[in-house]
Image (tube, rainbow, N blue to C red; front, side, top):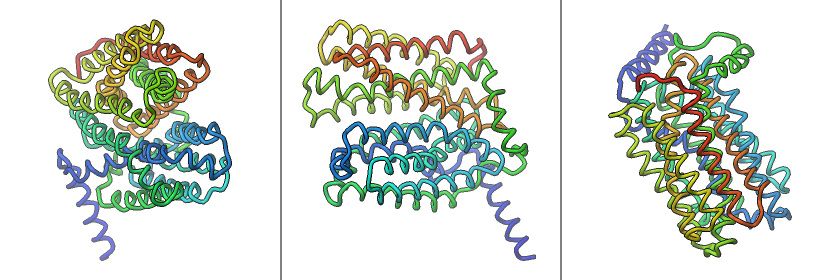
Length: 413
């Protein structure tokens, strides 16, 4: 009897927590930490890559594949975690993913060759992606409409700090203890996050869960892809991510090798884009509250189109030299603040009972597009900035076409 009473008290506690339409900042802090796992897992070890190459007797290309392998695992794994969370709840799925992340991080720390490291990075990514994909679904569980877009903007703004802090922190860890210490640090982060996860309430009540078998739930992805409006939101966010990963992959070569900008100062130019994203996300909170997320998303897509074309022209003509390219890329990167949160909110809005699956599909499309965008920059590389500018321009065109062609007109949400 006491066990039953305790269970009832736990259910009542969770219900009362969810009844509050404004969850505390501690809950939002945990969600922000979960959403930041993509950056935590990659940006932290970027400064260690040269040392890893020497330690593992691998060339730079093999070490770079640790990032590609991670993105492959990260994009594909989300498709599995979404239906699991819709059926069994968010905490169980995220907790399982965190355990897998910890196991993968231990494997990375103990790796003695590049191939093994790549394999463990895929395992690490399969776990980390649950935190990122499902934190978005948890926001949808707690908020609706424009309020959800505002809260996603807040979390993404906090998350954007990691690309600024991660490489600096990782560099200090490498200097003090070597590259393996970074992965042991990630083990600790995973365990702390796992503990924090179970201090917040389950956001998906049992009565709201999807009871269909997992196999059938996975097949439902094909049904989702028949929804024209959902394709519009997926396309807008996906094309933006293609351009952003082209930016990440292409700017080191363009800035340092082509324009001879000092390598030690590259982080300052890269950081400009991150600052632009943070400022745009902050502005997005206000704009969404006033105009609705659909209108702001359309404006962001138009801006991505314009700045993408600008960047493409600058890269091809050389107009303005280094800064002639830095400026349009800064503004293109900043459109992330108006596109990502609003495209996610729009994708989730029409499927409240399948938020986990839709969030996972959104993440898979985004990071899958990132693999495509960064790959094209490498495939078309010709020793000039043109391939980077071309991919960014095509991405901006894709963002706008996704909005115009795939999202029917409707009143702003």
